[in-house]
Image (cartoon, rainbow, N blue to C red):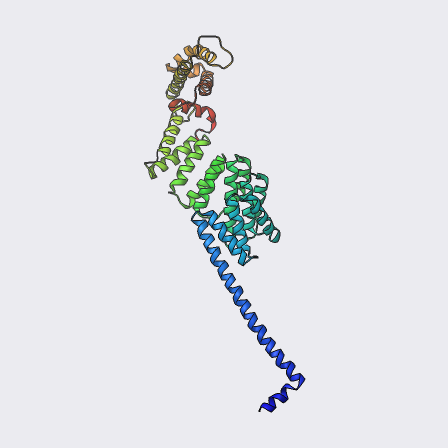
Length: 387
C-alpha cells in the first residue's frame, strides 16, 4: 500500500491535481472565514445603527452621532448609515460636515427624496433659503421607495410651514394651491390645508377647503369653526354667523367661536343698509351709529389730550368733530316719519362720516371694541356683509 502511494506521488499530473484540491479547499475555508467576518461586521454595524436611532429618538443627539460613526466604520458604503450620520451632524450643529456627506449622497442618487429633504432642512438651518426651497422641491418631486405620495405631501407641508415662518405668503399660497388640486378625500388633510390657507391669509380658499371637509363630515367642529373664521375675515358676516352658530352648538364651551358669533351679530344688527328692514329701523340704526361714533370720537380725544375745538387739518379728530356737529341737526330729523326720503343723501353721508371716525380713532387710540368694532368691520367690507 505504501509503495502504491509513493508511486502515485511520483507522477507529476497527480501531484498537481492533489495540490489544486488542497488549494481549493484552503481558499474555500478562507472564503467562509472572510464571509463570516463580514457578516459579523454587518451585524455589529446594524446593532450600532439601531443604538443610534434609539438615542436620537430619546433626544441624545451626541450619543446617536457616535453610534452612527461607529456603524459606518464597519459598513462604509451603507447609504442609510451615511444619511443618518449626515442628519445627526446637522442636528448637532456640524453643518459643514453634514453638507459634505449629503452632497456626496446627492451626487450618487440626485432623485432620492430623503436626501433632498435632508438637504432642504440643512439649508434652512444654515439660513440659505433659496437652496432650501430648491431642495424641498426636489424632495417633493423625488423618488421615495415606499409610501411616496404621503412622504411627498409631508415634504410639501414642511415647505409651506417654512414659507409661512418667513412671511412669504404668495409663495406659500402657490404651494397650497398646487397641493389642494390633488388632495385625498381624508377630511383631516383638507382641514390641515384649510388652516394653512388661513395662515397664508388666503381666506377664500381656506373657506372652500373647510366646506370640502364639511361635505364628508358635516359635524366636524374644526371645520365649522374654521369656516366661520374664514367667512368672518372675508366680511361675509351672514355666512359667518351660520357656521359659528353651528360651531357653538357643537361646542358650547368654545369662547373663541362665541366671541366671533357675537361680533358677527353686532355687525349684522348695525347695518342700516340691510335688506328687509323697515324705514323706521333703518333710521334707528343710522342714528345709533352716528351717536356711537360721536361718543368714540370724544372718548379717544380725551384719552389723548386732544382739543376737539382747536385747529384742525384734513380728517384729524377736530376736523371729524366739526363735521359731526355740522351733520347733527340733519340726523335729529331721522326720527320723523319719511325723514330719510326727504334727505336722500343723508344715509350715505352719515355712514361715510361714521366709518371715517371709527377708522381714525382706531389709528389714534388703538383697536375699537364692541359696537365700535362692529361699525369698523362694516366699513371694511360693507358690500359683503349679507353674503
